[in-house]
Length: 153
Image (cartoon, rainbow, N blue to C red; front, side, top):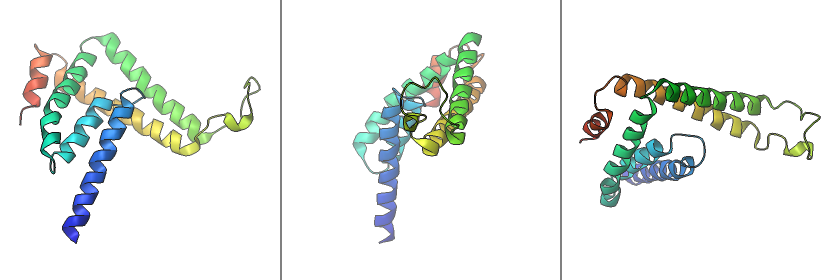
């Protein structure tokens, strides 16, 4: 019974990360890294997930390496991540709709505090990944080679 519960929990966690990663490819958040994490979890039970995990992981780490190769990229990524945190705080505090808001007040900051918490969490994860990427890839002669080296089993 315990093994079945563990298997279900692992599978649910893996699929949640895969779906969230796919969504975060177009929404704010570290989509490729969440997708790689979900595939890593699912690879404990499924061979197909293990086969797909390495290419996604390499692509995610190469994107992380590219993102910190110039100061403007680092600044823009940091500003975007801080913007996510600020927007999340706004959603959590949920002030009254301003006078210029053109539709019903009930449409102001739709989603409430759960949306705010998600935005804050995405921003904090992004900031953490920026710091990790700077420590890992900044100043490395060949960041793509380093990304591939880090993705080896």
